Image 1 (cartoon, rainbow, N blue to C red):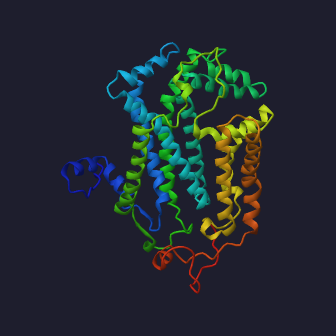
Image 2 (image 1 turned 180 degrees about the horizontal axis):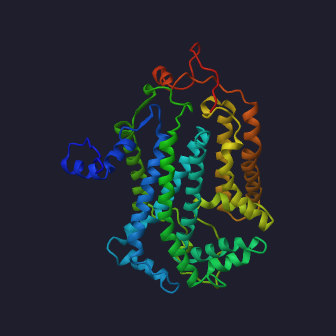
Image 3 (image 1 turned 90 degrees about the horizontal axis):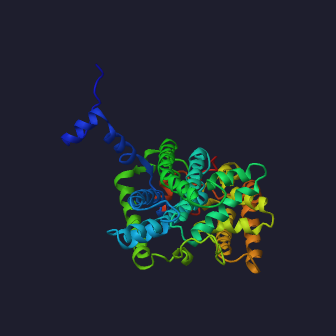
Length: 422
C-alpha cells in the first residue's frame, strides 16, 4: 500500500484533504513560500490584475449568457431585456462591458513592462510566446463579444473584419463563407460568434495556466534584469507580494467602479444603441479602442492584402521579439539608448490608436503611415542594430546591493560586475 502524503497543516479538515490530494501543499509552495526577487515594483502587479479581470469576465459572462438570445431577430432586444428587466442585469452587463477594457489595459501594461525590462529574453522566451498567444485569444474573444449586442457597429464591424480574409488568394473567400455560415453576416454568424465567445475564455484559462507554470519554472524577471544569485535576493511571495498586489487591486477596483457607475458607455460607440440594419451603413466603422492601432495599420496601406498581412504581422512579430533584440542586457535601466527608444515606440502605438479612431483621410493617413513605418522599423531594424552598437551601463553584482544602497544604477565608485549574458 502506497504511503499517504504527509501534510503539515494544523487545520484537521485541510490536513485530511491534503493528505489525500495535496492541493494545499501545492498552493503553499507555488503562492506562499515561492521565492520571488525582492525588488519588484508596481509594474509587477499587472499580471495578477489581468488574472482577476479574466475571472470577472468569465463569471459575468456566464450570468449574461443565461438571458441572452443568439438570434438575429432577438439579440438586440435580449440585451435591452438584461438591462431593464433582469435583477441587477444592468450592473452585470456594465461590469462585463467595461471589464473588457480593463482587461486590455492591464495586459497592455503587462506587455510593455515585459518589453521595458527585457522579460522576453532567455530563458523566458516560451513564457513570452505564451503571453502573445493569450493576447491573440483575447483579441478574438473581444471581437466576437463586440458582435453579440447586434447593434449597428456590431453588425458592420463583423462585416468589415471578416471580409478582410477575402484578401487572401484562393482560401480567402471560403474562410469568409465559413465564418459567416452563409453568404452574409446573419443569424448563423451570430450563433457561431456566441459559441466561440463563450468557449474561448476557457481556452484562455488553459493558456494562462501554462503561462504561470512556465513562469514558476524559469522564475520571474526583475527591474534590474539580472539573475537571482542567492537566497538573500528573494522573499516569499506571501505575505510580501500578496499585500503589494492587494494595494494594486484596490486601485484597479476604484478605476473599474468609476467606469461602471459614472461612465459605463464612455469607451463604447453610440451606433451600437441602434439595432443592426444591413441596409444602412454607418458613416464611420471603427472597432473597440483596444484594437484601433491594428486597424490604423490596416488602413494605412493602400493594398488590401498587404494591409491585412501587416495588421496580423504587427502582432505575430512579437513571437520573434526574443531573437530580434540582440542585446545581452535585459533591463532598459542599463540601456540608455533603448530606454529612450522604447518610449518612442509607445508613442507611435498611441498615435496609431488615435489615427484608427478617425476617418482615413488627410493628416490621419500620413500619421498612420509614419506610425506603421516606425512600428516595424523598431522591431526589424532598430532592435537588432542597437543591440550590437549600444554600450550598456555596468550591472550590479546582485539584486540585494541596489536595494541596500537605494536602488537605481550603481552609484559612482561602487563595485560593478562586467556585463553578463541575459
